[in-house]
Image 1: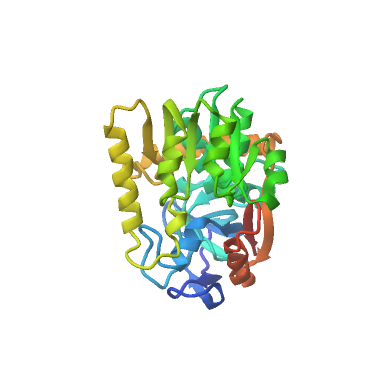
Image 2: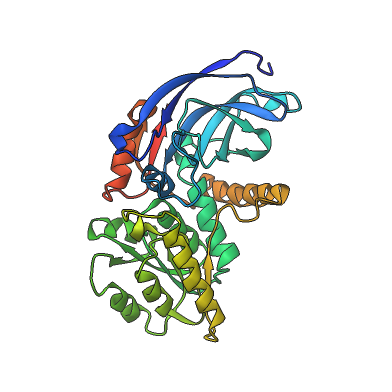
Length: 345
């Protein structure tokens, strides 16, 4: 029962800096799981903003081309290696992979798996794996936003943004969320006050809604607008930056926008202005692997429990079979959807 037979896996490969239509499909043989490993059958994966950057060669520390993308996965254990509890076979788990999840089968370390509650579908769970951990940690670990506070979430209709809005509302926090007007009704249903991100006076609109400033801004856009996000904060407020979407189409060194961002954050923290600026790095602390895994498991378990209890509503923008991953990526990049584009077997 512990899996001694090699398995054929279908994988979607990013061969280089190509359009979504340039993705390639291959089949390869996966050996049986080694000590401490499991073989996971993919039940759902998805498209995150990271893959959109990787396609352009713009993700900060992506591997060299070619490689199999896929930042997270939900799947069923079909075999285990030596030293792994055979009771895991047949059960559903979630994991953050960073790359490799756009595949029908994966070999993963058992220690990286987090159990998915019974009754939660794979697609629903997939919407809150990396998105849920990111949102939870930014809200409760990085910014430590208290009940009664007011925050701004840029991209409130996106995968991380929509989850962040729901977690914040559950914690008794007022949310102002930016999105295109076509998604304003969705943002309202999530519990946030929508503001049009295409409005040239967007930041002024936010200031009108919160004239005394806000407690936190969660900014995945970066670029020139980051300074405006900083100005929205009240005394004692916290800016959490977690991306550089504004520069994803720029040519040149992929690390330069991030280094510029770090410089601004460091400068703002140095100034005696009573405000704080942080860059959220999902992988921070991984050098202490056991502590990193324990923190990830604790946070994702809480998010999945909220999903199982109906506190969080899964935001599935669309579902595509693995063979149509190119169409899934194109849709995710179209900026026309709310929630997460999910890939299924």
